[in-house]
Image (cartoon, rainbow, N blue to C red; front, top):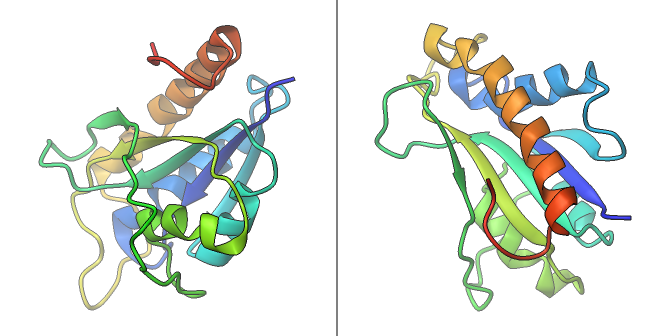
Length: 165
């Protein structure tokens, strides 16, 4: 059986940074993912790093990520990670690249990782923000459907290699 982790990540106090958390909440209400584990990691990088060492075949991270697109634009990225980088994972912040780099240092082997990214409009600024912007809020349900499609495609393809449809 293919083990898939869907990790919602982000800070609920920083506007569109809460995107991954909101998608995880939407997916938690769905039965379409079957046996995939959906977890809201918020900003807990340490918890995500340890979860990635728990024998998953694939991890789908869901996060707001500035990529130069229109706010609310969804994309799928397979990050290339430099395992030699010495970046330290903070227990109170979640930098997905730093988390992935740290997995080998804590004695694990990272699964294949895909990022479902949403272009943010605002990350709250210095004052913070307790809600998603309109274009990012509108992307939550489409992102949840995209994750469901990804999970089905990964299971069908055997999920450890190759392109994602």
